[in-house]
Image (tube, rainbow, N blue to C red; front, side):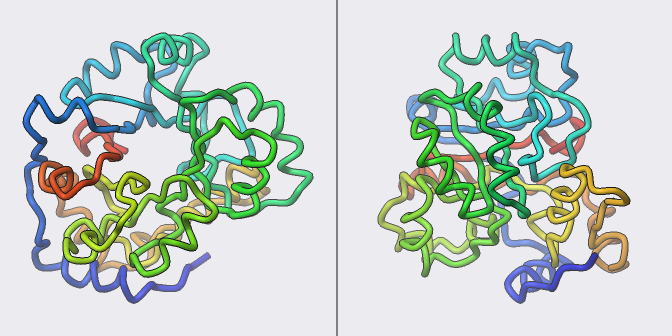
Length: 280
């Protein structure tokens, strides 16, 4: 499977083959200010037997964690990565609730029908509470969840490839929060035009997706999470030698200037573990 190349993402890839215009060190606001920010952090590939409190203390002690995204039990609505095993235990979720941390559920499937949704209603009901959120790609799923499970906050996934601020009003009519593609992080003039900055989530750091010319892996993750026979990973690195060589040459994640973005009025961020920490 090969996805079409987005011109905007190709622009990022082309720029990246030389040098990217970004801060190489992730800068945070003054300690008095950072507590007001909302960081959603990744627990992807956390060992199920590692307590989430210890995990957060090890990898994310420098930011105020408001939510965690990772897999719990299996759901055919999962996306973003392949489900292999649970990354959060029941005890982890209980600990998060006790500490005011929400569960941000990655439901970025791109293939959906009503029967599939109905089969997943018990799963959705289990985590339906204020403070929890769902990350969604399919607009039907967003609308169905809003109708049946109104306490969830609904976020438009980065997989929607929102690389322009021009159509945000249309996205806001469907989603509570919109995750922008990180290529917009350095386009400060465009970001400044967004009125509802409190409804935007930006990447604090980013991995290979930031530079990927196709983002084709996400479709294959959908197929694998649906457990389609013969489904396998599709990745630009497998058929684009130039991109593969560039990614292989990188030692770390791209770190954005969170201090500047917060000063500009943005309060919601998504943060991943670094490449050297078994990454995103």
